[in-house]
Amino acid sequence: MKKAVVILSGGMDSSTTAFIAKKENYEIIPLHFNYGQRTQKKELKSFDDICDYLNIENRYVIDIPFFKQIGASALVDENIEVPVDGIKPGVPVTYVPFRNGIFLSIAAAVAEKEGASALFIGVVEEDSSGYPDCREEFIKNMECAINSGTKPKTNIQIKTPLIHLKKEDIVKKALEVGVPLELTWSCYKQEDEACGVCDSCRLRLKGFEKAGIKDPIKYKE
Image 1 (cartoon, rainbow, N blue to C red):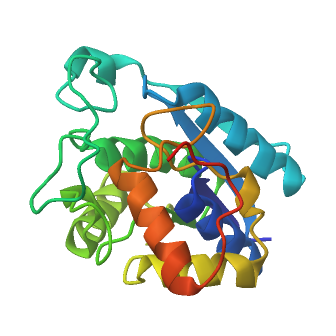
Image 2 (cartoon, rainbow, N blue to C red):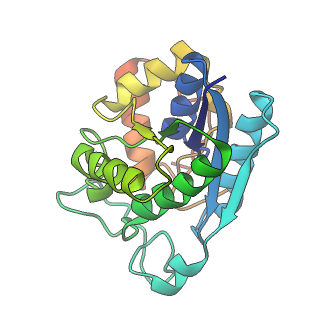
């Protein structure tokens, strides 16, 4: 059976990506990162809940705490506030420098070890917060770099099934492939109830609203 490493944060996008990989008949090897993010415990719980739901035992949780040392992002630096005043043009302070590049590099190592032919990542280019490491051009360049820097017999394809979807289309796709959305987590700020006002919550809520579907998780605001 063909194998795929799936970068799985426990959020709606990455969970939908994992279920799409399953629908494409891949043996899923989920990979989660604890990188000092504000909602690290909740994201890890969502990851484990999704893996349990899919009956996956072979899963990777990798700690990369150096992101907190680097800082420069509201997700890992407590001195930088997570913005709650709406999504604005440009790269937001929630961008973690080169995070997806580092994630994909580690995922490539796992994929080479496991003999996987694909890496799945739930990046969204058209309807995201404007992160540069979510662009299709970047993903294609990373795929070339990974295959240049691995063994000759290794041939890894990076698959991004959501990259050109709007958030409302991702909500619909999640329901289509059977994602238990009540187990997912998107909030940047809080772990008990979603704040409802950070960029990630706003994008998620907007997606559900446009899809005409009620979000099953609880919100503070």
